[in-house]
Image 1 (tube, rainbow, N blue to C red):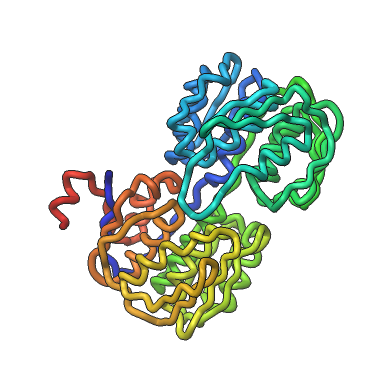
Image 2 (tube, rainbow, N blue to C red):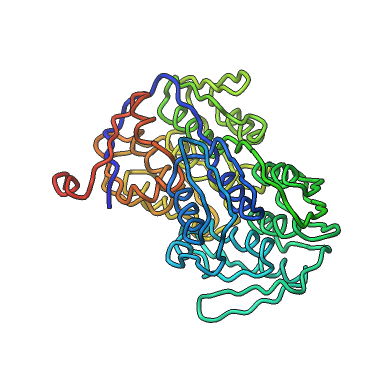
Length: 424
């Protein structure tokens, strides 16, 4: 395992660019399995989750490779039963293989996907949706088998605004003759981008970006060329990083239209920023306490509440953060408390942060992708040295994060296992 070492207390300056979205890239990669024709995807981040999806594909015999931010896939020869179970079991995003393989072959067989430990994340919403279309589900030990011989286009009512369940149903529906209507659909930007890709491939998709999506399927889908969305979560992290460190920082490739409520919250906190096209420039300013509740899109994403907690440590007064989605989203708060934050976890869904407080460097854990990135932010704010273990977890979702932050003035480096012992 590797670690990230930060000497904090420094202001950032210069320009940092936002990469393509992890949450956008994974469904596009999965959907490329729906056709025998080549599919080209641009603006795909060079992160571990993408590499793992490509590894899963090549394990099934798919021709798939990444050069820079471009991925080309041709699933001409594919054996859906040659899934590398170990990789699938460790990657939550592999759940998207369910819809892709079911749509392509009428059958899917995979282990229960893994991923970050942020609370209960059952796949029952996915399986219930597929059963509504006529699939038959069976489980044995940790394996799920979906028999799609009875699949027919129809109406699906999702149990919640699940992004990946919406995407799975979209992929299956894109292959079924007739119209499928998805109610209670998620409307995130990457759902819209998947709809764009499926349309290029020959399906008809209407309503993406709303909570009702209508899809007319096509039995022989074509290849496509598609550009992934920019990462609103990475953009939000960098903007909040500039605010918390009271830095003059320019962030480019920001998908402004995907962050409307986020920017309204910045105004409430007193963060000083200017926007121009896809660029946000943040200026140093005193911060005020705030109340924040995460909501399904276009609300503030659950993946952005953790960075807001670091901002709260630098704001004057008591801030309340409420995340109703997952019951283990506040694990980073224990690490922030070790660093000196005045923070109270009221229950599994609410936390109160009193500020401002001086954070101090500590030896802490990454925990999960978003918590890990948040603790990098905390380390840059803190005085002294912070060591964050398991850098690989953060690298699952952020490409070249250490190098990009160093380029804007952060004192940060990545060290290997042999170097860590010298730091203790």
